Image (cartoon, rainbow, N blue to C red; front, top):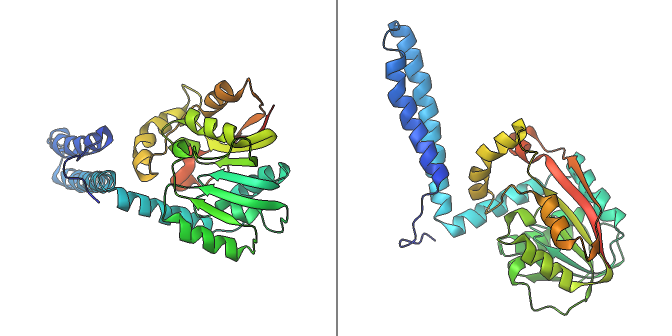
Length: 284
């Protein structure tokens, strides 16, 4: 619901509205000496672009000030994406999960609608699964996905942020899964600390996240522009130097194997998220 006493306008929305105004106002000066058809066409194109920018700005303004709408919309988007079986991204996802030899007690942070469940099909070695997911709109979809895939292991849904998952027995899980979740948490280090505490010695942490492109590249420029918008639409998702954050926090206590790669994501709307990192890190 909208909080009337904490109404906020992020800078990206202000920039969108200011750009729309500048286009509408500036168009008249740029074409004042042109013939009437050039002025009319220019006015029409500028008006359309301005309306689009204003529309995007209003949409983002509503989302950022309505937590329930934002979380529900994000859950619907992720669920629709999860319905698409097959495809190169699912192959990448399942390759790393299957190569880890998932078994025993499994803990996943940010499972969404059970996106990784398709990779667990025919697995009889998972004894128990716990999903830590603050977005409760995912719970029903996760249960439906589990049934759809014919998975029989016990499932516990923990409606908590990864930072708040502290009431867990230390060294009690064999596998921790973190795929496309660290970008949206408030503190990557706190979530990694909770994952580390829950993991047994010799246990594996499976990681796959999108990341920032190298500085000075065209992709990094695109990420800098699109990132603030996606932060709202993606329910807090940020573009971060994920390999550095993971290596710096886990490096001394884990055997870290990370690989950067270009994820086979569709050009629209996730082309800016193609820079990825994946890996399996093992607790010493």
